[in-house]
Every structure is written in structure tokens, then in C-alpha cells.
Length: 277
Image 1 (cartoon, helix red, strand yellow):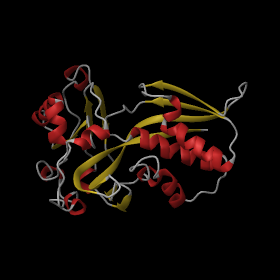
Image 2: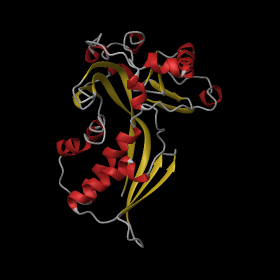
Image 3: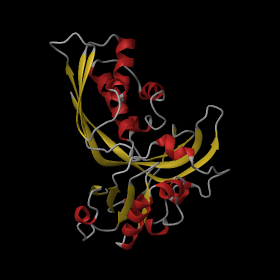
Image 4: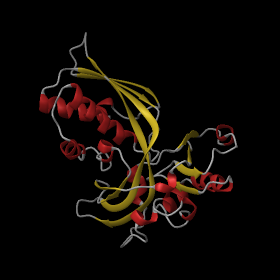
């Protein structure tokens, strides 16, 4: 069985108060994009191991048993007595980028296992299980634009009419920003400065400086090259530029495909370009 785990971008991100459990309440808009990892589940033969992980593409640091797709698989294997499986992933979404690649992989592998082994899990049941693996994992179950509250797990559908027929550019410099690192230096708000549900209904030309990401000051301070990239994209004519999530990817929205050769201009960076429907 083969499926694809797409990335997301954040449109605005406001960090609110710290919760008793140590997490932060936040408000943001998640928007799915076509950049995708490829996942495959195969029967594991010629081995006595309960699972194996085969990973190509962008490297994923850490012990394989800590990989989110392995953690999701082993949790369901224990609960439903699943047979040994080979888990294959071709990583096209870079890590530490604020694009939700790991969370999307986790949600996608759970949906694949649910279908392949007829587990009978509803969408809400999958969301509940995924909450133990990451705050934004639940978003990728339905995978539709959503206003997110709480720790990113309370989702309300939202439309973004201004993005229709626009062009998306992502630039990620060769730096890794961990979520823990980003939260450590962020300044919390008492309340969000704007209602994102209303803000994203405005034309994209009105977003710059109005819809912001609270992670930017601390990330820009430590990694000034991220700010440089954002400023360059704005000078190239982007209607809106912002860091996605906790970074380090910079999102730029244009009203047409940029004429510049982005790959040549942003050497040593990950570059992704796509039209938005």
C-alpha cells in the first residue's frame, strides 16, 4: 500500500499563555500544500523483527524506533496485534522546517494502517490517538484548511479565498530549528492581536504586517539568514512573506510565478514552488 503525506504551512501564529501541562496555547491557520513524502507499507518477510524502517530522501535524525511512523505503527501493532511490516518512506519534506512533515507522516501511516488492516477507526478516534504523537498531527486526518486553537489540536474549518490562483514559494536555509528551541525564547501574548478567521478572508495584499508569526523575532535573532530570505522574497515582489510554524522555512505568496530562478538565487537552500488552487 502506497500513500502520500503532504506538508502544511502556517498563516499567522500567535503564542498565548503557558498551560499547566507545560504546553502553550496558540492560534494559527493550517493550510495544506502539495509538497509530499511517499509512504509504503509492505509485509515483512525473511525477518523475525516486528518492523523495519527504510528511509530515503531527506535524512531523519535519531534512533529509528523514535521515528513517528514507527511509533504510530508499534502503538497500533500492540493494540490490534498487527503483523510485522516493512515501513518505507521517501522524505521530500525537510525536518526542522515548520512544515509539519513528521506529523503528516504520523497521521498518514495511521490512516493507511486503518485501511489496510480494516481497523475500523473513525476520524475522531484517529485524532485522539494521534494527539500523543504531536499537537498538529490531528490536522492531517482531514487535511483541510483549519483555524487551530489550544495546542494546535482544536480545529475549525476555514476558507482562504485570497489564495486561489496564487503561487507559493518556500525557501528553507540549511538550519534546523527545533520546536523546543523556538518555544524557549518566544514572548507570550495575553490575547491574539487579530482574529485569524477574519484576517485570512482579506485579500493577500493586506496580510503583510497584519498577519504575523510570533516565532519570528527569536528565530531571526539566532538565525539572521532566515530574516534575510524573508526580506529578499518581499523585494522580489511577494504579496506576503512569513516564517512557517517555528521555522526555518520562509513562505512567500506571489500573484504569479516569479521570473527569477529561485534555485540559483537561493543556493544551498531547499526551494519549493507550486501554484495554489
